[in-house]
Amino acid sequence: MARVLKIINELALLSEGRNGICRLAFSEADLKARQYMMNIMKESGFAVRLDPIGNIIARYESGTVEEGAPAVVTGSHLDTVPEGGKYDGVLGVAVAWSAVQRLKEKQLPLSHPVEVVVFAAEESSRFNFATMGSKAMAGMANIHAWSKAKDQNGISFSDALTTAGLTLSDVPGATRSKKDIKAFVELHIEQGRILEQEHCVIGIVESIAAPTRLKITVEGTAAHAGTTPIEDRQDALVSAAMIILAVRNIAAEQSYEGTVATVGAIKASPGVINVIPGKVEMWVDIRGTRQENVIEVLQEIKDAISTIADDQDTPVSIEVISSEKPAQMDEGINELVKAVCRDLNIPYTRVDSRAGHDAMNMAHIAPTALIFLPCHEGISHNPEEFVATEHISIGIDVLTETIYRIAK
Picture 1 (cartoon, rainbow, N blue to C red):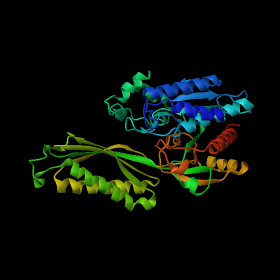
Picture 2: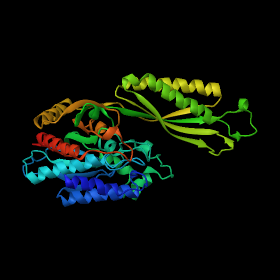
Picture 3: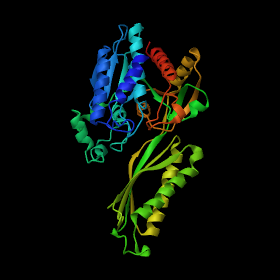
Picture 4: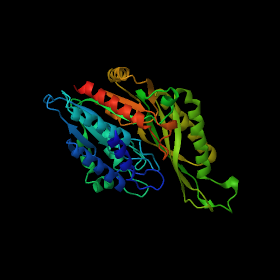
């Protein structure tokens, strides 16, 4: 337990931000964190390798493993959002390492090898694509779209891979066969308040909401802010503001179904105080656990944008950056986790995940489960993110026993 806390705290020092943790995918801080974790797993006696997208795969085989048996896999990610917390992703990696280390130390007989995976580029904060490492592992890499991805500094995803000693054209080689993995189990902080409200320590996830992401571009006419009458303006930012409100209001009508929509980033050009904005780019995130509701929200947003564009005489283009379907977790593994919780006398509840996770991609190639631990007041993607030590200890117990029962 002490080693897990040490790992979490030492990884928190590998950050490029002054406020909270900033470890964007394939940044210098991320590369240092990845090397730190690789060193720990090598010291533990695991066989460690990198796949073509940079996923770290640490493998442990007991002396009783059957030849050719598929692996039981666990893990999460190390990259963060800007000004993030120190538990998101990192907790799942540290607890996964601890669970497999326990199995190794106890020399428990296993029929299957066990792997800890540190997925690359889980957060979309740098390149606007989420869960890239697990997508590549599941055979879902979109090389064409990824080849055009750039961060806010104009650095391409391809160049970032090159800096890490990787090559974009090799990424499809990260795909793993369904025969290669028996099961995948991810442990993660909840990033919500259900577990706290229900006084439960373990959340057993039934479904994961998947994001549909849009880039919306509004075209107006840049003009002098002092000399152009209001009635003669084609103000792209005014149209954008209307679109932002429309997105919010449309999602609010579907909130009872658990569907949400957010305009999380906006860029106005030329971006100076004395010029009417001639162009605005904004990025929209729509997600829910029911695909039909996501589709309905998307269509209503498109209809609202069309009306606003006509009324304001500001043409608008919509680019769908990504469109994913909600993922269902494996009922068999969930029942196993329930049994583990009952045997250990740990309170649990069933939940849905409104945030995306690597588990949703791994579910395409293996039976998959996602286990939540409560985070204080549901705060996440924030420097105040916190998980109680006693809950981490319980998480280690539950993950260790779950992996053991699957792999034995």
